Length: 283
View 1 (spheres, rainbow, N blue to C red):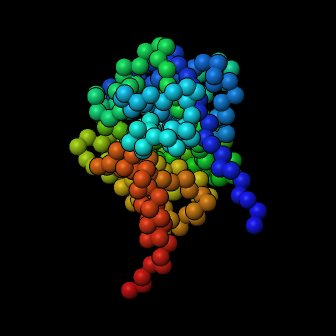
View 2 (cartoon, rainbow, N blue to C red):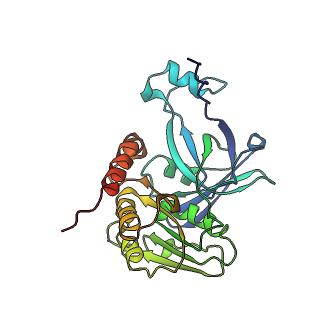
């Protein structure tokens, strides 16, 4: 039997904070730069993401920083913490990578880092990953998500094929969290204000109530795993949309931090797929 090829190690990038910008009361943009980003391979997808690496307190990782060595030599609880964020924009001409963070004061890990970030601060990250960009073959596009999906939705709007209709639904806490988005002819952008409602409740209702345009849709639905599960069922079973026409996944889950969500995400997705691929019972 032929030997399997060695698993390719994810590339580690090293960058410095160039500047930060408070976009809304709960969203901060951090722009990263540096010559080390030369050749950063982003641009193919509009949902590109990176995994930021946050060192554990009092752990010396040595130089050169090597994740394979760290994982081999150190116990898991000493590995750097990883937090996944969508690339809002990548400008290879000036080597600037923009990432938008949802922040809630000192809650969490990446949010407080973004709030305190100052020019010159250093950060390492893995990536980019990604799989979605608006199809040029679709008759129209559906974009739906909460704050966590807003950067990817904004990037997608900038890449919608000319003349293709768009229905975009974005749920945020309130009107103060709305952002100016790229103008797209034929796009209907609806901001939904959550208030005290459950995350995704208004979003799910809006998509369910939508009068779908004619033709083949290409849909992007991302955000909190609970409402994503509901919309996956609606789009696959009730609307009859083929899996190939959907980019749909949970970015996060209520009641779990990223470590907990990533550990259970594969099993969660497999369970959801199994539930929604079963033939429906006929009374």
